[in-house]
Length: 377
Image (cartoon, rainbow, N blue to C red; front, side, top):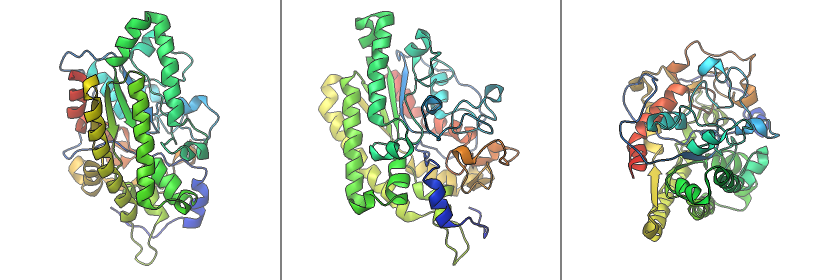
């Protein structure tokens, strides 16, 4: 990772980040060369009816466009490499990993935001995303940025079910939900924004106790999905959050004038993931009689490898994003007046937090064994 002596003031950054959302990537990346970003179609027959997505900006295709929050990305240069160069509200230059999953499954090309008022019944039936950039399992996290809490996303699922019932009937709707694939990608904002950046939770919780606090909220959320008919659910673990460009900037060591991953942050993610795996295994055992399948998606190891060995993937930069300096810009700080790199496919990150479309495509490829298991189940 490159080093630099030109760093913004950490105190100024902390002030800015009270207003600039830290929704960070929580999906897996595997080793190997960077692949082309062609569309995929499923290579097998699947009974999966829809893909239903919950979480933060890693899987939000634009729900924040429809709520009163500053944490949006429905303006250039976001969407620069999307169809018709449209800034849809995805926090990247193009597609998300969940878009690639839907296309691979042969269900649809793109996952739309649930709050889009123009959705038709056919859009609802094939799946939507309820995710909201800036959200987290801790209710304080979405309150900070005025975005959609996970519990509200669950309420939207209940509303979604009623809308589907109105179109195809109650019995068919219940069967439809049970054959849907659920994806949950959240939790990093709870740690990066809520715990480490702000003081409130640290005054009450140690790292280990906060890990268990968030895990309990996560498991309660999964219980809610199960109660609403969810039977195939993939849960993404935390990535090495200490290696995000914005986190590195906030913890820049002026004595050595070098940038490097912050292990205290990443250690919290490692501990969280260990607990999560055990809890998912326990829940899987308890719900096995109901034909529930829970999938843990490891994001830590693969993403750390991509960041530290980015040349192996065909990238040229992993320590900063394509937008602006790449050290601090995200959301409204990455805007039409901000300089962007000529070729985003050479960067792991699009802004100081979120991956490029190329990285999201690699994310999809890395997660394909889990996708296959879910779709075939």
